[in-house]
Length: 105
Image (tube, helix red, strand yellow):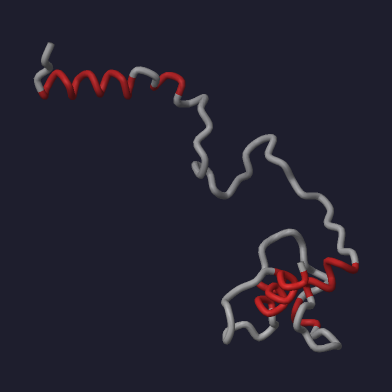
């Protein structure tokens, strides 16, 4: 059986719109970016132990400047605790420390 282009378009429309009644019940990610979905996990505490602080301050000359926000840091992304660009754009030595750790293994 061969469908004409009009019949094929009609069939596609029926398939796509056939479940439109359930669309109000479905969750679509990003539909309300200013709100968290109901039941989404929430981070309520953050443990800042000596290991975390040492990683956060990698490559920083003591005393650490207060502008790094050490006491205010939460569990959101920050470039101060994650590697960025490779040398020569790596003033804190994150990539050098990673190579040294891999060599010790």
